[in-house]
Length: 130
Image 1 (cartoon, rainbow, N blue to C red):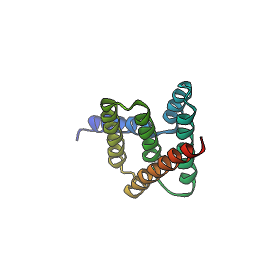
Image 2: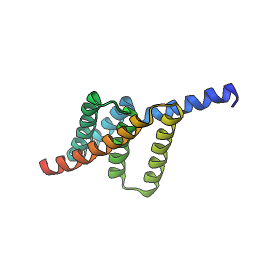
Image 3: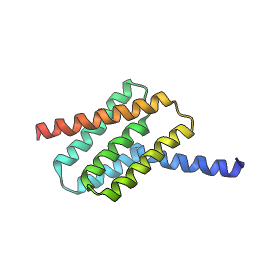
């Protein structure tokens, strides 16, 4: 692959990975707060905190896990097929970018699993408490 094209592809891959980053999570979280839906906001915050706490002790892909939390809760809110398809494609591209940039596959898989676990725990725990 041409060096210039390879650099461009790596830049795009890094941009896609940013969709699972903490700044993007905070941006989405602020948007959720503005909606004035306390249960939904609590679920979103709880899932993020659970994942971040686990990630402090387990070597995992932060982007894959937090990206899944964002994917799950934005889809729960919008409940729109077109948005759902678009966001799943974006998440798959995020995962593909992690692989392309040669991040450890084991950490990517752990990120996805722990993101799903955090999402499930937060979703049901908040429903039980609120």
